[in-house]
Image (cartoon, rainbow, N blue to C red; front, side, top):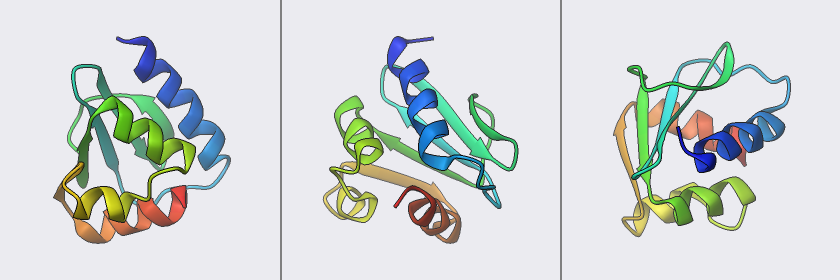
Length: 96
């Protein structure tokens, strides 16, 4: 497991706080690993999810830091979304 994934879990936990996420989402960070968000919180996990979001380290970092909007990353091809777009939109609201 990479340091980027560990740092991503920590940052997402801070961003999400004690709010619950209805559904499951997985961030796949290319060449680094996977992070899952669900009703149990944020974990390092590569299991199936309602939606899978795939991005480079740079794009993922930008989304977490609030410098890159997920919708913009998706429309410019920097973020690939597979699965439930409704769940992806809920995630964007949670991270927004």
